[in-house]
Length: 333
Length: 299
Image (cartoon, rainbow over all chains, first blue to last red; front, side):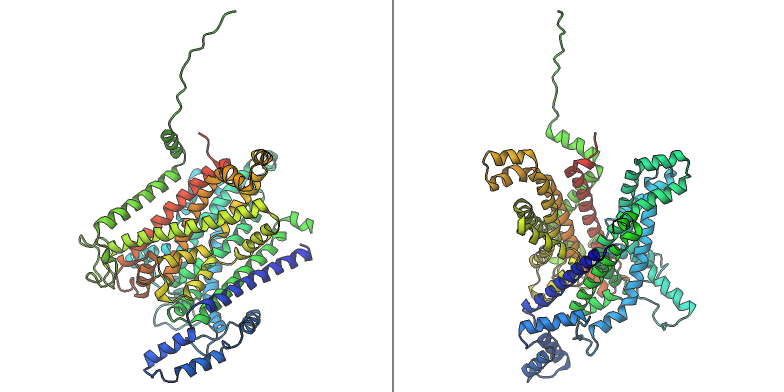
């Protein structure tokens, strides 16, 4: 890939992040809500101190967060903060910063999301390829059908159903949380097994929600490839079924499938976040949920921006994989 | 020269309804989706007429009752009759879906037409804005908008607006690409040569040909809107007073419904939502097939 294309993609990335940051900057400032006033009012209500001198407190906090400066100055400060991945201080969990909160939660979300996306992607490609493959036995080909049906069910709802049937009725797996109540996080086999047991249901919900799409696109691709001359040729040359399957089907479908993955990221990430919140996992979704319940605006906007940046960066990185997957793109460069 | 007498058999053209039914037989997904949707509509309409909808709000009935003859879906922690809540929630979900779907499609059609038909810098701007906004997960921006509103201001209609604001890019790009190909067809050239105005060409020549695509885009938008408003509600950003399906799941999760053994509380809205989204997805796929003759199955 030539340098020009790389620079172009990075330029696009910067534009996307800038647009997202601008939206999250201006929407709260158009809004009639004043987060600091709300926070102070809440403290006054729960802490029982009188409203006396509240205006001064609010003014001093506004100065501290730089809200009294002219709008343009605020915008410049905000953008330079975003460029340094500094999303400000949490209003609810002061003095923790948004980035600290995200960093604590990120390993949980990242682990779950990476594992489920990879498993769903590989499983979907294999099932889809088999479903399109005329020489596969019919029982193997029909394996893909239930996954396609599950595609319409968002992972959150699949999560509720799994919780009901597997965890509540059958009592096979825990009802939620990242590890059993009462255990202390430690590096032992028992704890790791406990951890894994708690991840099975959320992972299943996420995998079932996305396998179907990969199955469908892979099957479509497989059917197109079947008619191609080079597959006919390979068959007549006497290559065995497995070689054709691996080198002619999977290889050719890889590039469009990775493109599909790039496009899917924008929906996969938010739905994973909502799902982990249903299961009470301590990931980004739970931080977002806490922030929404506590009106912790800096954290809400910080998480939104962080995920947007992460998704955009992942999209560009995946696009840089193209030349590795497709020799034709490599040659053009 | 002998004449051959051809038997004059009358060719009977099947009526529109028979054609439609025949098509549905070839497209079972569309049929099943439509039947499911019909069932849901029937449930909602009959429910609105027979069930006391006041019971969809808190403090109306005995709390935490499991499903029984009196309360088929049980009652929740806040004293809502879940049957009434389902009826009202479905009606509100449908309202948000149709409003936001129609809004997004309308904006998309208008922008798509302007972009493709007039081209030039307008096209560049609209396409550029679309391609920059598309990678930003819409749900997250909707979270920002919804959370910056005063909780008391969030109603069913504001939910629909929040969804519309970020849902017009898809239809814009679809309509734009279709108009671009349509513009080059001969009948448009003939219309232009015969002196038809731009608006005339758009409304009389291109728009009617695009209707199947617009219908498919509309169903897709309704699906996306129901989905988006559901996610917002599950995150606790919906109108908290209303029995929206996502709100009920959010409340059930917040009260630890499964931990406390109130299993019926989140199950009813979850199943309802699965049926709604499933029927819309099936109709969407079926309409795609109808709109895109290349994948249409032959008889």
